[in-house]
Length: 175
Image (cartoon, rainbow, N blue to C red; front, side, top):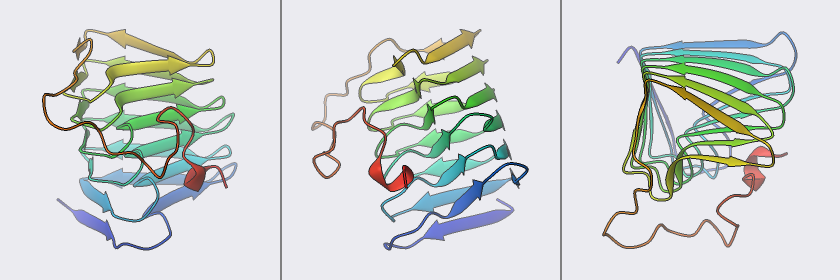
C-alpha cells in the first residue's frame, strides 16, 4: 500500500473531510482504527474519493458518509472486519461504489439510512447481519453484484457497541 493510516486507541478519526467544497482523495491506502470512530468520515457537503484502498478493523463503520450534498466515489476497495458496517451512508448523502468488497463486517456490508448507495460489480459476503440494509427510506441499488442474503456466521454473536442499537447512527460520528 502507498499509505497506511493506523489510528491508536484514542478519540478521533483517522481520515475526515467535512464541509462544502472540502475534498479528500485516497489512493492505495490502508486504514485501520482502534479509536471509537469510523476509519474514514465524509460529511456536511464534502466529497470523498477512494481508489484501491483497504479499510479494516475499525471500531465503527469502515467509511461513514453523512449529510446532504455529501458524495463519495469508491473503486476497487475492500472494507472488512469493521465493528459496524463496511460502508454507512446517512441523511441525504450519496455513494457510488464499483468493484468493491464488503467482507465479514460485524453488522452489514452496506447500510443506507435516508441516503443512497449505488453498487456495481461489488461483493458483500460474510457480514454478520446482511449484505445490505436500508432504513428510513434509504436505498441500496445493486447492479451485477454478488451479495449473500443473510450471512450470520456460526461463531459467537457480533459484539455490542457500548449498548447502542446496531442500526443507530454511531454517536461518535453525529457530533
